[in-house]
Amino acid sequence: MKAPPFAYARARSLSEAFQLLETYGDSAKLLAGGQSLLAALNLRLSSPRILIDIARIPELSGIRVARDKIRIGALTTHAEIERSAEIAASLPLLAQAAPHVAHVAIRNAGTFGGSVVMADPAAEWPACCVALDASFVISSRTGSRRAQAREFFKGTYATDLRPNEILTEIELPASGSGHRSAFLELVRRRGDYAIVGVAAVATHTGGTLSEVRLAYLGAGETPVLARTAMAAAEGRRSSDAVADAAAAALAHDLRPATDVYSTAATKLHLAGVLTRRALAALTA
Image 1: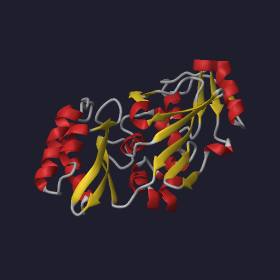
Image 2: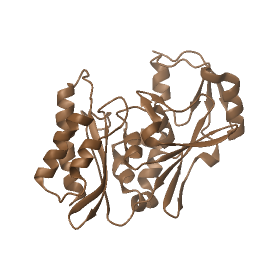
Image 3: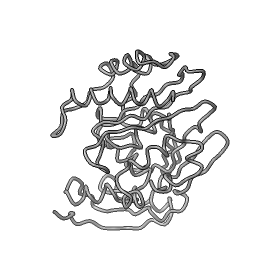
């Protein structure tokens, strides 16, 4: 199948991109890395009147460290995150997750912001952003606003982004003393979207976990912050019993859907397996 016909415009600045968005409204789609959008076009899942190419806008790329915050431009590629020494040092969860994103060719072209805006519930970056309590900088011609990751994702491929807005930057808190992280997922084949996965972070002090955050991908219509499972592990010393309690608590947090490969019960069981592994990794 081939993409439907569409017009094309390259924006060389944010102001030009905003002007095009206002002109075309809902009939426009932004093109960044294109790794998800082009597939959707070819499958006729999307039929925009025009593609607005924002890939050459320089201020939308780059990784910047500012005190206790890491700012990642929306056009920063998956590969740039994977190779970044700053990310490895200050946001190890992203460094752990990056090799799981599709394949090398896609990581070289696809963008962090593009994955976030696509809002596929089985994608790695949205779950990582929820686990790390990221803040999204969203801009339009009239100014900028911020949205917390935990509130940004509204459903499968649905976000809080409005037609005249562009996600310009992702801001994440740098890891502090005692920070631990683990990213785990199960896939049918390397590079596939996850059957289920978990982005886990916590502070580890004297064998006890605090500030536990467990965000799951492939387990609902959005990334899911498993608050009941988190409470089961919060402030507890690492043990098999604590891990089992957190895994059992997922029944209250996750509502995975049955698909052509796995039943909801299978996904819930696999989420429990990953939870036990993640908690072990956080205290190793």
